[in-house]
Length: 570
Image (cartoon, rainbow, N blue to C red; front, side):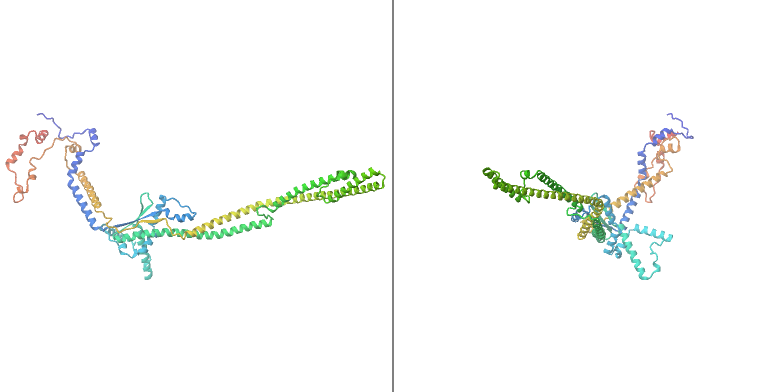
C-alpha cells in the first residue's frame, strides 16, 4: 500500500476561501457537542438557581393585594347640569391621567394617613422585610456610615426643647408615612374604559383592605369637596362681581337720564322724542290749516264776486248754505221778496204801475232787496275775516314748524350720544342679569352633593398572597440558573487549551491532521461494576496476555481506525 509523504515539520497553510466559507455557517453539531460536554455545569447552575429561589421564597414575607374600582361617570351629575349653564366636556385620556395623579397625590395620602392613623401603625411603618432587602439596607447603612451621611436626622432637632423636638419628630413621621403611602399605592385605568382601579399591597391583608377602602372613600369625598369648593369660590367671586356690575349699571342709567334731561330729550311711551312728536303734530296741523285757508279763500272769492256784480244779480246768484250763520235771515228776506214781487205783479196787472199800492209794493220790494244785499255784504266780510284768520294761522304754523325742525335737528345730534350712553347702560344691565343668573345657579349647585365618581367594586379581604408567586419565582430562578450555567459552559469552552477534533488542529495550529488514535481497552475499567472490584477497592493489574492482545490490534483488525491512523502516520 502506497502512502503519500507529508512534510511533518512544516505547517500547511489552509485555503482562505474555505475558512471564510466555514465561518458563514453555524456548526450545529459542534454546538451540541459543547452542550453535551458542559451539561454538568449547566445542571449544577440550574440546581443552584432553584435553591436560591427556594431560599428567596422562604425568606420573603408574603404580600396581599386589595383592589377597589371606581367609575368616572359624567351622567351622575346630570341633575346639576340641567340647572347649570356650565358645559361639561367629554372625558379624554388626559383627564383620566389627571384623575390618576389625584389618586396618587400627597393630599389624598395625607387624608388616608390621618383617617387610619397609619403613622402610629407599626405594621405599616415597619413591615417585615426579606433577607435581600435587609442585605441591601445593611449595605446602604455601611456606605452611609463611611460617607458620613446623616439622612435619618432631622435638621436643627438638637437645638430645640423637648416639646418642639417631639412635635418635629411627629411631623417627620407623618410626612414619612404620607410619602410611603403615596409611593406604594397603585392607581391605573382599566383599558379604554371609564374605570380606575385602586390597589394597595401589604403583609397584612386586613391592613391592605382598610387602606384601599379608605383611599376609595377619600377619593369620593375629594371629588365632592372639589366640586363644592369650586362652586363656592365661583359664588363668592360672582357675588363680588355682581356688586361692581350693579353699581356700574346704575351709574350708566343715571348718566343716560341726566343727559336726556340736560338736552330735553324726553321720549313718549313709544320711545319717540317729544320734539319729533311735536314736529309731526305741527305738520299735521299745517296740512289742516292749509285746507282751511283754501276753503275760506274759495268762499270769500265766491261771495265777493256776487257782491261786486250788484244788488240785482246778488239775489239771483246768491246760494246760501243752511250751515251759514245768516242763512235764516237771508232766506226769510228772499221769501218776503218773492211774496212782494208776486203781489206787485198782480197789482200791476189789475190796476197798472201807477196805482198807489203798486208804488208802495215796488218801494217795499226795493227795500227788501237792499236788505238782502246788505246781508250778502256782511257775509262776504265775514268770509274775508275767516280767510285772513286761516292765513294767519297757517303762517303761524309754518313758523312753529321751522322752530321745531331746528330743535329736532339739535335733538337728533344729541340723540347720537344718548344712544351710545343707552347702549352702554343696556349692555351693563344685560351683563348684570347674566351674572345674577349664574350666581343663583352656583348657589343652588352648592346644595347638590353629587359627584361624577362612584365605587363599582369595593375592596375585599384577599384570600391568597399576591407576591411572591412561587411558580414564577421558581421558573425565573431556573431560567437564570440555566443562563448562568450556559455562560459558565461557554467560558469553559472558550478557555480550553487542548484539541478535540481534527478541525481544531487544522484551524488553530495550521498542520495536516493525520487521524484519530482511539484508546484500546480503556473502557473496561469504567464498565466494571463495584461487585467486580477486589476487597481493597483497587483495580487488578492487567495480565501479560491482555497486554500482548492489545499490541496485536493493528494485525488482528487491519481495517480499524487504530490501524488506519498508524498507517497514515507512517
